[in-house]
Image (cartoon, rainbow, N blue to C red; front, side, top):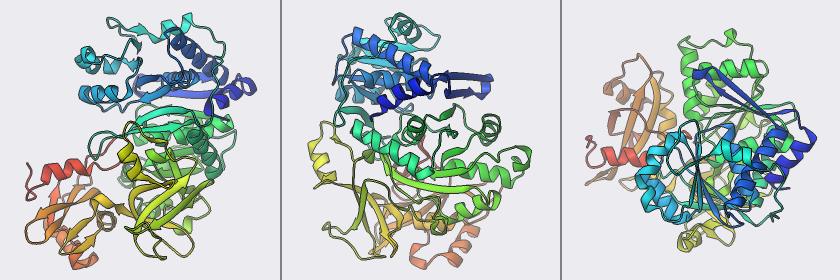
Amino acid sequence: MNISEMLTRNGRIYPNEIALIELRPSKNSRTLITWREFDEKANQFANSLNAKGVIKGDKVIHWMMNSIDWLIAYFGIIRTGAWAVPLNFRFNSQDLEYCSGIAEAKVMILGEEFIERVEAVRSRIFSLEDYILVGQNQSKGMESFEDILKKSSTSRTQIELADDDCAGLYFTSGTTGRPKPILITHRNMECAAVNEVLAHHQQYDDNFIIIPPLYHTGAKMHWFGSLLTGSRGTLITEFNPKHLFETIERERGTIVWLPTAWTYDILNEMDRGELKKADYDIKCWRLMHMGAGPIPVSLVKRWKEYFPSMNYNTSYGLSESTGPCIRLGIENENKAGSIGRPVLNWDVRIVDEKGEDVTSGEVGEVILKGNGVMKEYYKNPEKTAETIKNGWLYTGDVAKMDEDGFIYLIDRKKDVVISSGENIYPVEVENVLLNHPKIHDVAVIGIPDVRLGEIVAAVIFPKSGMVLTEEEMNEFCEENLPRYKRPRRIIFDKIPRNPTGKIEKTKLREKYGGNGVMK
């Protein structure tokens, strides 16, 4: 059953049940939509696209902030047999022009926040014939999303969707260069939905809290568990720890997925007494699910000190795997620090440079095989062949596996620092530094050095109101790290992260590249 059919079924079985709640705290706004309304509006958008000549295999660019309309538009697009092309809300005009050149889309749907960026390059995007605008503002040559829905039928389109049909063209966030176009199928997305339900023991009475951006395969694919079970989801369009706790109390949220950076924000506010668990009735919150980067054991321990009875889970995945493919499992908290084992219809190996399996406990590259592996990097057969070999997806992530089959993520291959011939994994150093009581966030990078090849540099962002010196850090490193892993440069600065919480190390290397001095 593909995700479009899941929505149709929910509209039939749970027609008057709430599918989605959209909260905008700054406007004190709360919007609801039932499963039947959701299904019918997706049909209306699909029919409006059909009327514009959109057919199976066409592409529709989708550039919006998180909202119920985001999901209505997404399902409407795939119901035509077209490919949805969701764009990162941080992309600039040049990114749009680049992605449009690859996608060659006929139609674009955009939120009013993006009008200026679109207009800057609109005359140079020749494939786009129609622009559909979501919001109250008007722009010349753009149709109103609300108006075209009103004019369109709620009847279901008759387009047949096969498992191997393409459904989405996702561009990576571009943290390592130009965004890569990842082509995924309906089978890929069904795989993600099934594994969400299995991993989180999800039921009809759950309420999944959606916070990270929907254009990313992580957040939306996690919500697919709600789609498969017919349970409600709640979108918070503006995140801060207080909003989250208020939402869980008011909407009776049960499952939350958060990037690690946001988890630190919550814990730091609780440590300072600015956010108090006792002030909220959040006993309904049964599962904390973390991801979008390595998760230190120290972070899990801090969380469990505040929430000892709450289940904890973590997941690992890539855009190329259509989201999560390895999970810890809520029954395996004793393995905290591990990303877990492969889930249903997934296999994983740890291999050396020759593609041969390493022994238990030995470091190698994570490779994956399963129903979620992307079809290809669109229009890039060379990169596809480099990444998918004999059905195995080569992730570029370095890890090791214990005797029980649990995988411990170490770092990205491209981020490994080689100093005096020693391989130093930045995440291992970061995990140690995060134990310092004054550190809020940290990123470790390699800086070129004539004598050593590279040196380790630690970019540190202290906790609010705390003073941290280079001398303090050097003393801490001497006590807690072997000599060759100790940072030779300490830099105090904010840590750039993308919308899903991943550290943008490319930016840090560009900023502090040459000799560790800010450029």
